[in-house]
View 1 (cartoon, rainbow, N blue to C red):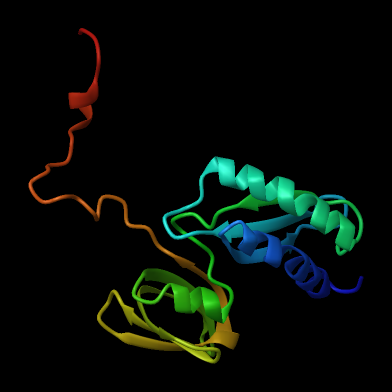
View 2 (view 1 turned 30 degrees about the horizontal axis):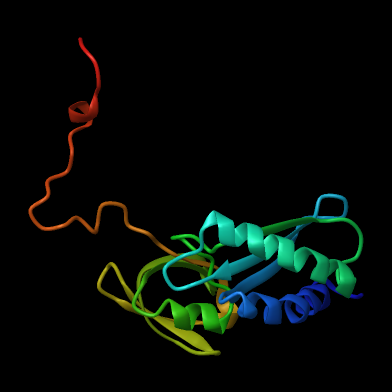
Length: 175
């Protein structure tokens, strides 16, 4: 098999039907690292999240499919995971699935690299628009994006009437 992109696409084609049959979405397939220390990362998602039992089931299901497809040159470590609360955004589908969420995007400009953080207002195959935290609106060409992810804000979802716990209030035992 040829390039890393071709290997990833072959893996995607081999495992996507089985992942869908398990009731999950194939979020991403990545081939990371260099020869001798490569990781094939298969990321799966489901509304409401993915638990460890489902990760185990997916691993057992896709491992023989990847082996049978003979899609990846050489040795590799298979890693099956969920995207997590702060997930990488790489494809137009990833961006479309994150509309309205807080994101952090690093991108190229004529003046050099820049990072913007804010709510993802729109996304298509050509560009994304972010309502930035500083009150500005940024339109960024997808070709200029070097890194993007959703941002999870700890503590932002406090329920009304509930105060934050003080660290010492949880201490057990005596003096």
